[in-house]
Length: 429
Image (cartoon, rainbow, N blue to C red; front, side, top):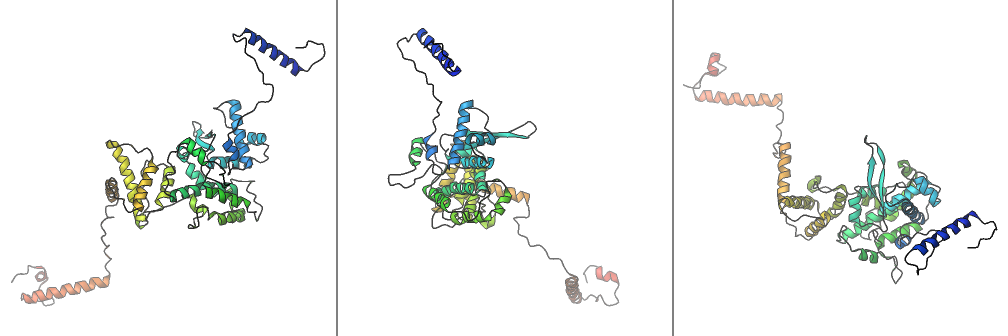
């Protein structure tokens, strides 16, 4: 180091002290022949390539993801989730609602997972527990960590902001496309296989599947984004407001017009219809689900059962419930409920489904319903109330028959001078 008497900056003096300390430590170490290096530039952080090449996320969505991961790396893996204001400041975003919209899209695309909610001892809400991922989670992992993921998608498909609506509808449309193709949407995939499938461009330049989105859904999202809006969309101001949906009906109608082609040309299912299924069984009866199925599983089950005839839906659910009961008697556990349901639905479509374990489930439910409503199974017609006219006619017929009997037995007529006791006495000669 140069020990001249010239005035130097404090930063240079601090750097000089750091270098001297580094030299001292290197000389005292046993590896005397090894070179030593100092990095004096700015710190750099690596980001996954997948988040940069994601064909669904917009630049602000990617930036919000990077800001969150940067905050996590600065403070540690287990830290407080940065507030919307802090994210907006770091990302140089003017609107907090833009941050809220980006977080909703990250959750829908499974880059971010809402794992739980924190509450005080009094039950008052304290905050959320989030998990950030270096690639979108598989569906089976997402519904395991996020107990309301499918419900969130259903609500987001009718969100106040058109962008959130389109992304949520794209996820649901991709699920519907896979289900119609006979795929198990909860089947496990090898990580390498998932990454190969997530390549954004093929050698011919066409978009491919990217994690939660099929190729058709990605194309539809790009098509919708290219359509110029007919009216100014003010959803950014209040993206979670229910009133905005009514005030901006033009943007919603524009989105619904394009959502009908999410799956293929043969279906007319709209994005709002994809958000939630309310199915019934035979004769319009509500379906009875096994208690083991959570809300996420019930939503997925409805999407598979939708392809069956109403009379087939409840027997399939009963068979699934019977299979769960059989585990208590030593049968091998069912680790993937949706996969087992998928197989039952395939058998039902092929006409090969034969109820077995579900027969007892059905019988016990009917017996339980019969005990609650004893007269439900007996279709006894209610006796109509007798009118006065019918009563008089019935009495006249009875009196005529009684007069004939008296005549046949040589008994005096009741209208004769006989005593009243003759009318009530025994019919003997």
